[in-house]
Image 1 (cartoon, rainbow, N blue to C red):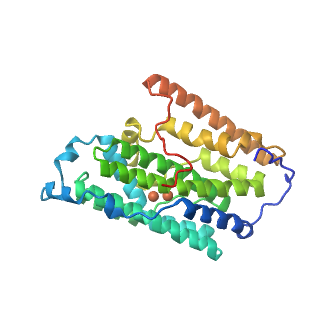
Image 2 (cartoon, protein in one colour):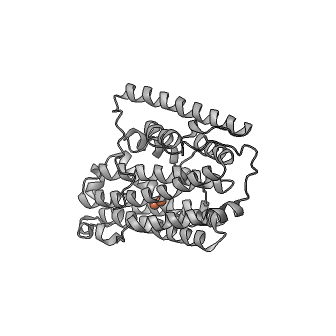
Length: 322
Ligand SMILES: [Fe+2]
Ligand SMILES: [Fe+2]
């Protein structure tokens, strides 16, 4: 990728339809890679069914009282985010669904994401970790609201999804580490592995889009990284829950900077190494690098202040398929 010396500064960006058509071989390669590492799994095998006998008549448990607020908020937000799947499907199918291979990927992705909400809900319900009435009302409100991000085009969509899947991987992984039981830990680890594979697909589609037209794609990456919002932003009391999640170290500013923005901008997409961009893309490149360095410095200061380790607490392997 470092050889991506732009000689196409004046290249006219393809339409979404032309771009998707051109990227069909790459989509086929990445889908085959996905199936090469992914293994079938079953939600019911991760649920401690016998623990349902400990629930009171309202579906609550003693164990819920011992679980910290940050982990409860993370389970709540993670599940409601997965519950909003119909709208993500709608968005992704609208963006990518021009030909059969893309439609196939979108359906497959939807089926995999659906498994996450089934499994997390079963786990929470059987363990009585969240109030079932509150959870159901929040789900109704979340899905009724239908609030999701709407990337303006395919390049922005690839970049947004890469960031979002990586953020989701980190959040599930770190939530699992805070659960007290082995089944819960294994479940969240299992889901994080799926999210990792989704992340790899979209990260590498973004790379292919960069190779196809660096200028148009750098502008898209800049928009999506500097304006990124987690997909659960429409959830009731999202800010309150986000603060608790951040305080627990499950997902916070430092993780966002050190585990998402920096590795994507400098590590994978090597934005700083791309030359020969159009004027608008050059501005976007400078803007993005400035942003990355700025939030990196803030993250360092925050970590020094809180005594937080500079070690990133998300340890899932990028190549991990199982
Ligand atoms: Fe998911
Ligand atoms: Fe995912």
